[in-house]
Length: 144
Image 1 (cartoon, rainbow, N blue to C red):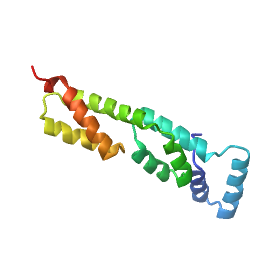
Image 2 (image 1 turned 180 degrees about the horizontal axis):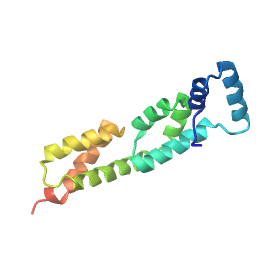
Image 3 (image 1 turned 90 degrees about the vertical axis):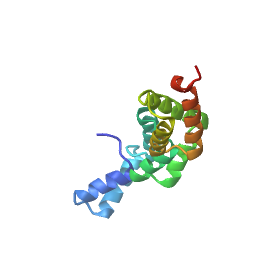
Image 4 (image 1 turned 180 degrees about the vertical axis):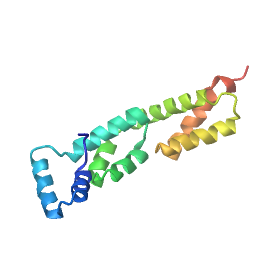
């Protein structure tokens, strides 16, 4: 079974006709013996989504909330994300996307890169600085 948050398991038990009282007892017991650990689940989810999808804090916060992770636990996990590594990830994503947009006008490239980084949860300040750098460093925008 794939890892799940306490809320996801509670929802699944409710779907299967379990009363809230029984579900709470079962989930409490599972938590006592270490089968449910929302902090570990949140940490695993953050690391995997950063690595596989390149998500930043904003999108990760939404993903954790959607999975039912407590805001305090989510905040603790998101605070562990290094700003510089997040910026480097944004730059790598921008460089990769830029390679597929060879020949397009710089304004079109800028718009597409901004949209992609925004959807992945990067802050506007990080997105715009990374986009400026990536476009300026792109071979097609270098003076001959």
